[in-house]
Amino acid sequence: MMKNQCRSCASGALSVARSRYNVRQNTEREKVIALAGNPNVGKTTLFNSLTGLRQHTGNWPGKTVTQAQGRFLHRNQPFLLVDLPGTYSLLAHSADEQVARDFICFGRPDATIVVVDATCLARNLNLALQVLEITGKVVLCVNLIDEAECKGIRIDVDALSQKLGVPVIGTAARSGRGLSELKEALYGVAMGQIEPAPPPVKYDEEVQSAVDQLLPQLRPLLQGLPHLNPRWVAMRLLDGDDPFLDSLTACHRAYEMAAKGEMALCAP
Image 1 (cartoon, rainbow, N blue to C red):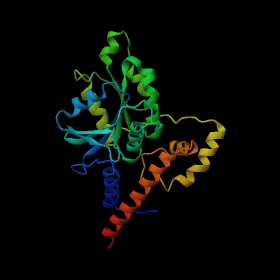
Image 2 (image 1 turned 30 degrees about the horizontal axis):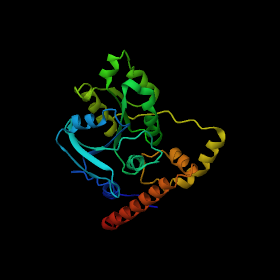
Image 3 (image 1 turned 90 degrees about the vertical axis):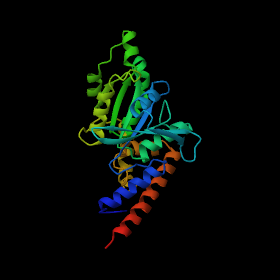
Image 4 (image 1 turned 60 degrees about the horizontal axis):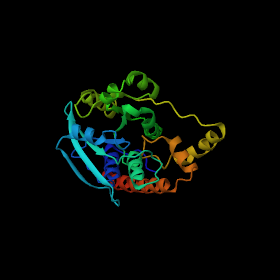
């Protein structure tokens, strides 16, 4: 286990964690943002509206799944937006789902935007709730708000924000409506000025007991993943999620190797 890392060591380990997903910041100041959502919720339109022509595409490492990254500035703060594959779940039954889940878990984004469709909010919230179980550093983007209004649907974003414990912003990405508010909320979460507090999921007594027994053994594995909810990780292991365990183990090894290398360079 690595202890008492200097800032440089921690930064180097973080850079290695992100480079495993072909995500490379221009500067250490640049905040990395994951963009998640179901298919057909306007996620690509939002990505293009935020980044303009400052984007490039490729594949996720070891996958035939397309990866898109783009950049934008807000308050003179640079952001690198990573567009995750559109998925309905993070339970990793497909390559798309595994890519999305693994980046949120192990790519260590500074915040995650979850895009949902205002016209069918209940169905889309399934993915949002799964992301909130993993990390609280989330901004919920209720997109297509204009289409919902045309159908007589009104979304109380303030009430939804209070219920979920994270910022909720209504947008219409095609027209640019709400994008300034979205960037402001994202800035607050990524910079640590806003501290989301999603309510913990309540498990039954037997499941909670099993989770509690696993937590002490998990903490060394999660040392380099401070944003990751240990209770959620315990649930994935109890569920027998072998692909997740493989990804967790590989990430831990890469983090330890990077941290050891950086500490050797920093040693007097």
